[in-house]
Image 1 (cartoon, rainbow, N blue to C red):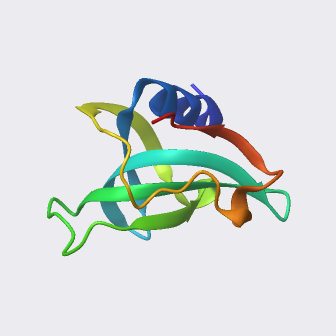
Image 2: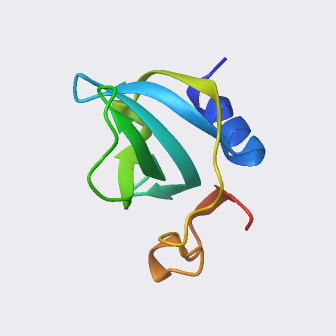
Amino acid sequence: MDSNRIFFEAIAMRKCIQATYNRMSVKLAPHILYTRHDELYVDAVTIERDGQPPRESKLGTFKLAGLKGARVSGHAFEPQPVFDPADQKYAGVTLFAVEG
């Protein structure tokens, strides 16, 4: 399955993504898929980094090309309040976003 489809599926079903990013294993709750400078990006909340939860819950930006071995995990998530789909940076470039 190509990585774009994996992210569409994960966002639609509110399922986490397991992948490798910067040589670290990450579990992400993807909230929005969008383009910037003709590249695909996902903004997601990190659930785990190398098996450990982050110190704080925040929305991070990840370039799809940098997420290696991405797959949908069985872990479900709820949309987080740190995500604002009306943020100006998403205007006109959103491909798919989680609905709250």
